Image (cartoon, rainbow, N blue to C red; front, side, top):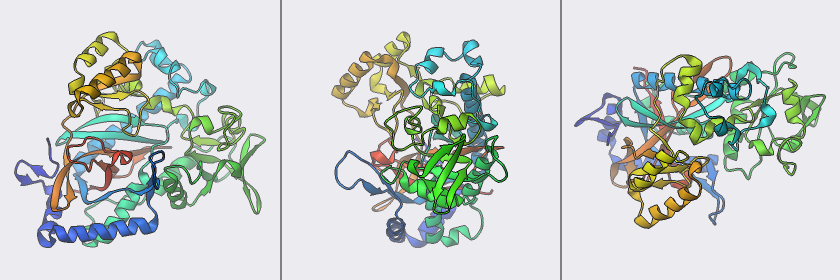
Length: 467
């Protein structure tokens, strides 16, 4: 496995500053810093929630003090590939709700779109302002060797985790100010300005003057509520819940003590089905009645657009490289992991014969749940999972078990190697861009490939160097 800190027996140049710091201070000093960082996270209230497991659902996400570091050259490729992918996915989403050229060309089967639970017929024939469905897109990447990255999945609905990216950096800059004084690490603190600028650039046709922005949250019981409050504060916009808003004459208004205030662009962090009880679930108490009609009539822009979740589907994921070629006329910069669709009889046969070597995922799964990691599973677990595939082959895809890279991580007695992935957050507005950094998640259990926080994973600060 590729250890990102080393090139052969030598420490890679990117990590020499970390090695020098450890040589000068030792692991005990790093453990003291970790205790300080955890106290700071707890004081600020940087938590996530896991419900249904008993006990206190509010948890402090484990934070590793050793940063993950990318050279400028490595990041240039990740940045270009992530932007390319986001552009292709937005073109795909616009296309499937209008002309369906990619279906007519025989590239993506129509049944994968029409049979997708995230497909929203109400969006048919509608092109959002700027032609953008997914304004914030998270691209999950893994590395297998130096400079060799693969895309694991795309998150076009409501990708979370950016608050950890920014708070991790804030904590690290407090803990290790001497490492930041040189300016060699690129800053990430302009994310809020970048997001607000992108939202303003997709103001609806009925907007007059400077658009008013807002963030719609389902409330404090949501697992990502801390992030909702964090982002609203970061951008200096109102954090609202469904009952705070109403629709009148195809415009959305916020109730305030000084009367109704117009909202032009709304970053919504609630699922499609709860967004508008007049259009989706009639029992929803979280959404805004009539907001979809206002949206389609040009009175408000919804970020991300309803129906964008089609592109999150793991069966659709297989076709993203073809989307890049079809819509952009370019070769994909970041490749997919080779993937077998169990809905195809010949591919399913191969999967069933090789379950002990493969990673199998639910097509609509997320959060690391519902997976089979063949090499880490018992014969009984594999046999049980095979029954699930047999009952619904189209509901599963399979991939080879990659030798994921490891990054240095602080253990009890010094540095240990743990598997990591990366989620850059691509923002699409007038331009498509991202901050130099992303959410590095780390599998804290030895040998584990599952990095999700809900499965015991932690996070690291991600550094991109200037040179």
